[in-house]
Image (cartoon, rainbow, N blue to C red; front, top):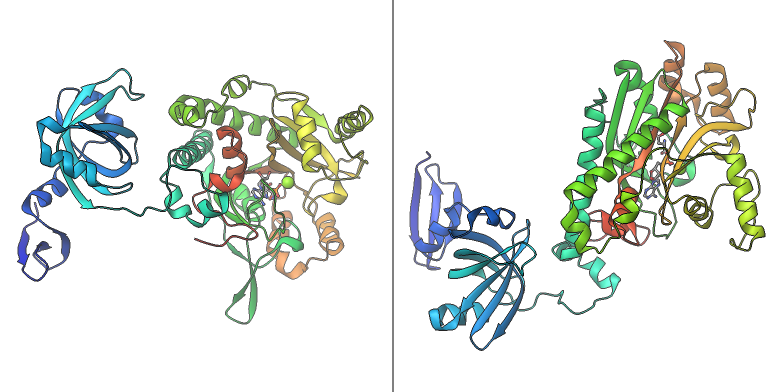
Length: 474
Ligand code: 4AD
Ligand code: MG
């Protein structure tokens, strides 16, 4: 164990704890607090294993209620919320202290764990001691209703509240499920760069960055082109990281910075990607339903719709999707008619997915509306071997991908056609010069998937600090 030095600072009445090489470890007002700071803490989600024992909890005051004789402190520590009870006749000074603290005060509570069947976590705490690290009285987010803009401005604090906390825990589980899914299937994680010299998904949504004056760099829209290189090296690879779109879309599905998981597989076609995407979604749904029951309850998510999701997901040819949309228009169920060749709008995606109550794949999109890199159907060259997965309940496209063109000549033409500078793509063309094989992949936006799992309206609540058209802060 390390040796430590204690000092008592007269100037501010603090005990100062230093390492032997004079690095500040902590300061405290009293030896008692110092002991508590170093005392091993029990987390709220473990309390059920400590019934009858005395424990130390370290956290923040979520809410408080008092009646002449009792104070109920709702303590949160990141793993849960527990009710801590102080009974005035037992200790009047303790009662007064507990009664004096405001929302989000930082506190260390010592007490005995008691079984309590009325509590959602099955226990509460009989408080025997309370140490207040900071007594707060002007926390901006109160239990009353606030507007979204205000909450978004206070996002750094808002993430402490129950619902936001639940959404971000679900995000955590979505990511964990995705990573385990690929890791368990022999994929190698090979992350791709964020500074890139060229566009992947069209030049209209690029964020430009000055790269030391000489070169222009762009924030990546997708790791795909690099994934194609790593798939040729590893057979099966995936990237998982932030991606950027300078989209002037102010919708509930768009962020300017979002996280994408992107698998890429050598010797695979677009149908294999529908198999892979379906298996991945099923494993995410199962994992969220298993590991995040409490959070889904907090969010009042109707889990029956998630439980009903099973294999196989319908696979619609774009031609058939168009027919379905036109029929929907004829029946008066859609406001606008849909023409072959167009890209689906949000109402179209919602309409297509609600016909099935399950996620729906659409494939064979018009090549003209797709990226330069798509393989086309040999018998119908106007159709790209692209796939999209539309989530149910109006969550829209959550997966986009497909089969990549293998021919060097075709890709050279495509670059010209899309007005992209060939010299910057020479490395990419090398993948067609040296061992070109059929290959395919896709990307799934973590935030859209999380919004769907959590059943919340807007993707902005599915990432700790969202970046959107009109939001760069906090
Ligand atoms: O369909 P997209 O643009 O596909 C690609 O970028 C491919 N290069 C991926 C690949 O094949 N490796 O984007 C893929 C997914 C979408 O289905 C959606 O889930 C998400 O990324 N996405 C967004 N999420 C939030 N905000 C935005 N602005 C998004 N744009 C796409
Ligand atoms: Mg797409």
